[in-house]
Length: 262
View 1 (spheres, rainbow, N blue to C red):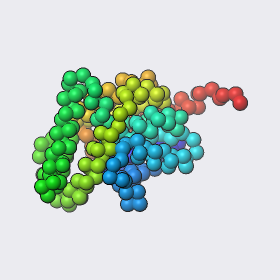
View 2: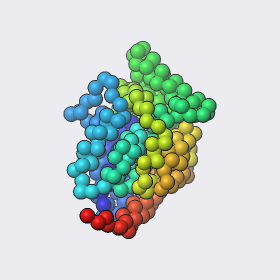
View 3: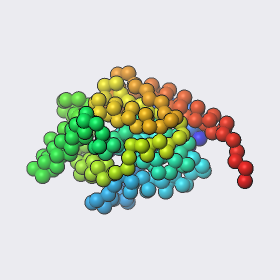
View 4: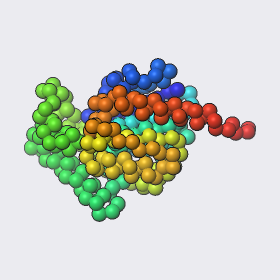
């Protein structure tokens, strides 16, 4: 089986190393650099999540048959968009806290407040960029996902790398905000779906994970004890067990599917 992994804004394809190491060896894993992270595919100033999904979809065409698609945060939003638009290409879907914020925009009052909280982060990022204070903006971004003071506790080298990504963080928020497809479109995804969230993650991330899963008939939602937003990296062993069971069940389901007559 082939599993394709899509990383989040603050990560890269190497973020999956510990998790992949703990998966069964018969699972072929391919961790992609997202289009906005690859030097040869620098995005236009105005882009959307759907634009990037098309780039990833073309890469998936190189595989022999449907793939198991796995995404974290922004990468999970991308994975969901791909599965919604091209469901036949996906054997199973695994989402770690998909950052698909536009689905909150027209929700009930609490969801609209959650969307406003994201807009406040974007405003803080823009203000930090305009005032030449990128570290302040990135600190606000990291602390939102991991709790107050998280950015300051990072090693200096890690803080520097994240600060250098301020432009990318802002661009990814803009790409997410450019989306307009509906929550009900998630029902197009009929393959087995595993949605994981950290029990210590922001309530917004937990809610979005459950919200998306609730639209899909074949979805399972599991919390990861003691984990936060970066659960694929911080709790790789636990996540690997959940993922192994999920992929195995999806493979068995594919074998049981009847063959269509020509």
